[in-house]
Image 1 (tube, one colour):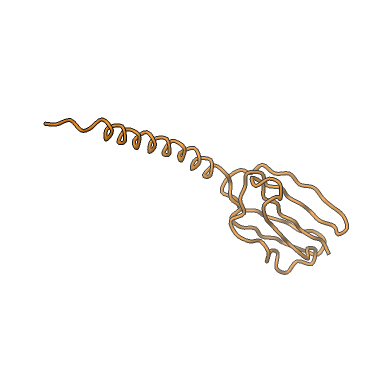
Image 2: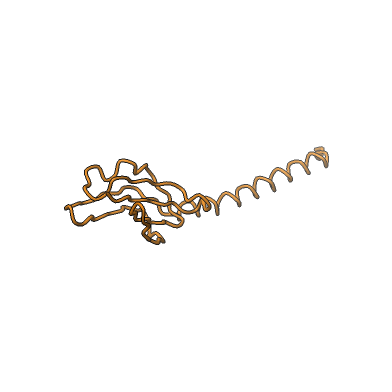
Length: 119
């Protein structure tokens, strides 16, 4: 039986190494994507004086909250969290909140931000 040419063996070995490297790079990426919590849903209860916000996530988020003025806003930064759906319609019938926006933080793609604007 004839042995394959050495150039064919090197090409096959090169493909195996490349495939192994790509597979090795894909595993940590897939694990990190799975580890990032997702904001799956949100709801609110409003009695005219108080607003209760409930966020449903599939993991424990790291977050920070702060307020801004002119107009009054509550900002919730969710680090390493992805908003699964648009929250533009939430809360629908609030007397305290006039607008809700969400999206990626402009300077950090690993952070999503949710804004609540007060009347």
